[in-house]
Length: 69
Length: 69
DNA sequence: ACGAGATGTAAAAGATATTTTACATCATGT
DNA sequence: ACATGATGTAAAATATCTTTTACATCTCGT
Image (cartoon, rainbow over all chains, first blue to last red; front, side, top):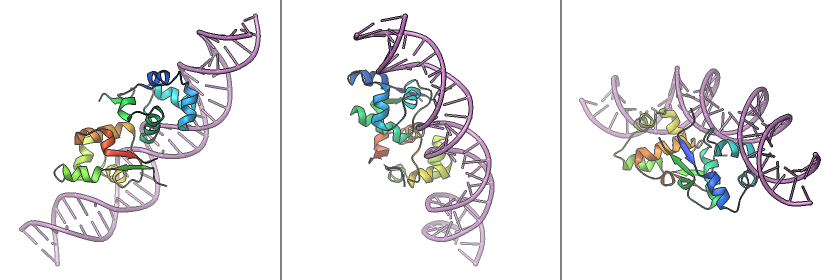
């Protein structure tokens, strides 16, 4: 069962000038596959990774990830 | 090196009527030792665990954890 | 049709988080 | 002094996240 955490990464990427998964991955020091897995909801990232992703987009963490527990 | 994430768990626990580590642990489905380790900054929790902790205190995630990266 | 870039996915290895068990100190109340 | 509850801490095992490597499809421009 996938973790009950939704994310807006795909939307935020495209709103950020069609940023690719590779560009996002490089910006936060992750691999493209990890970004893809998180974006697809396969698993949720570490708290630190989540903070880095939010910072890249210049938004708060809870604008990227929503907990639907 | 400890992760660059500060937390306000100790303060929030005591503001929540002297809630003990054990009570917090039970409320979020974790062990007391894990709560103690996170509170002490030994490592940062998973995103899901962070959301659950914030919910117990009724605050936003970024009021519990601050990323000082 | 071809090549390049973007994405989907998967298996194995590595890193990190979490649990379990166990023992320690400290403060408080009786 | 003693018992109890709260906390600190540690080692080993397990679970989860992340990387690495690899190959697939799809779209777009030439």
